Length: 331
Image (cartoon, rainbow, N blue to C red; front, top):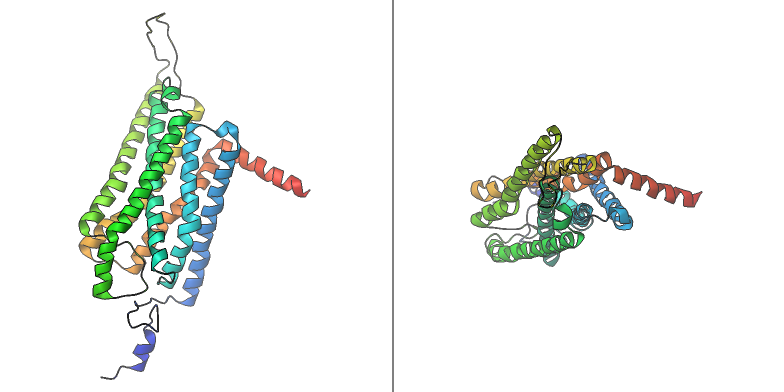
């Protein structure tokens, strides 16, 4: 049977010389160029914004607090996502094929999952730290020390690495079956069965996310009560004196800002994890939908430094001083 020439020309493959290549979606040149500019700007914003956060917190000793150490760790995770994960993902999304080899695909997906888990766990720790700061202000400096914060951060990164590379090992057996049956070259994705997709989404995102929302609701209730109360009486065994506990404006603003960071995070990442659950069950996924969900969650890493610049005075002042020193050197 002879194939129509126009139909043959409209079909594209990731590897034209291979008989086992995946089909390639070709975007119109104007759309592809516009997306390269838009997504490239997102990567640049993510890398530069989080790099500034890292430099400012690292070099200003007065910012070396448990709260800022957690923010620093989150910024490192977002920076690595923008510098290591997002550029290859940009090529994969717009060229609709993976050209960087199977070994790099495995590394890329493992690092992506690890950094995803790190960001979730860091916000989880931040919400706990804010809850302690608001609900136990007198015990806060005893419970949340710099040493405790560093131990939490190291534990978070270690657990995230186990999750990332563990899920990649889990997907290897499924991927071998997939490649054997479909025999398609040019794809790079984590392949999980229905049960693994549901469990990973529940325990990595939805359950921690609900817990974070619950903590911030409790924080709002406590802060509201403290704002309406003129004073809190503490009876001590020694002198039974009255002490006034007032939540400082800095703590209030820090809690509100990190609450906004958490809300934006959950909004950006919910579509992706809903997709992970729905995809294996319904099998209605498309390449377009997958890429949209991926880049919505990538965008979150570039938004965080913008939130800091709007709501954290120390970030704006440190940023101004940094640029002043740079410009003074050129004068």
